[in-house]
Length: 93
Image (tube, rainbow, N blue to C red; front, side, top):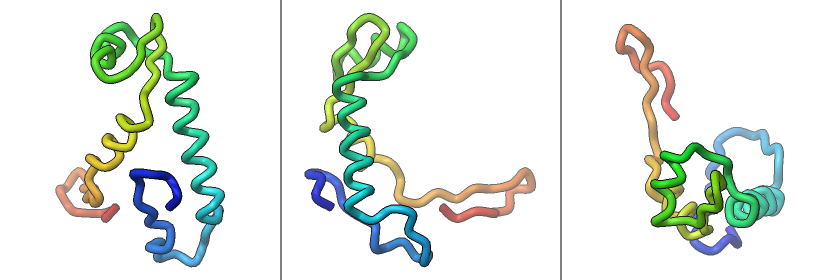
């Protein structure tokens, strides 16, 4: 992937279906970064207070630097099991 700090798992997709090319995925991701950095997200005061230390807060709008978003993506688990009410594993994400 051409986006600095992110790994591409495009070719790891085990399905034969690809809605977007890898280049198109990169455009979508780049635009998402632009929205988060430049436009921001409207949020409640409690969340705004939390983000004052890591992002730019303007009123009730939080703007997140690209580096913060990339670190958040990297810190998410790569695997997740979903269980039903009986405690049986039903989905392997």
